[in-house]
Image 1 (cartoon, rainbow, N blue to C red):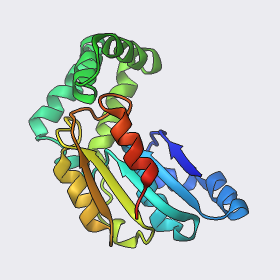
Image 2 (image 1 turned 45 degrees about the vertical axis):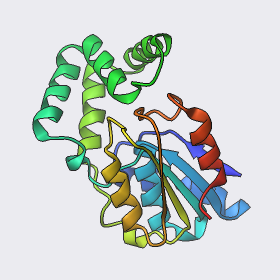
Image 3 (image 1 turned 90 degrees about the horizontal axis):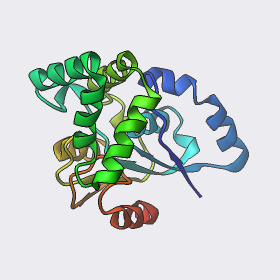
Length: 201
């Protein structure tokens, strides 16, 4: 069974400590097959590096190695400022970045979802955290068979970052799918689900 998680942790370090219950679960039922996306991909790398005996196979979607390299500093500053000063417009901009392949109805719903789930200050803090995360030192410690999946024109996390993610994990497979959406449930979901379910070989 694949364990799929979409949790966005506060920090990579905090993620390790807050996953103690997952470690106990793994010890009872054997090693897990872990599939995570976006920020969760970085969390999964931290977990797999710290507890290799608990992860049988690993699938990472939409991840990156260094948040500092996701986009130019000026672009990050503008987005952070917009999110903080005008959350309504900021959430619409993030929707355009995260889900450009989504239809108008889904884009509207996702914008509302963001605003309902987070204040402007929290949204800015989470986005800033994403820009600060760096897991480059953890990649060589991952020993589980790993599949890295990314969409070719992902606007939130460049495909080059996914390539570095795969290059940094010994033996990792790298699959690039068509599309521009960062969110896994936008765009061609069937191709993504099929690839993730197949897992690393």
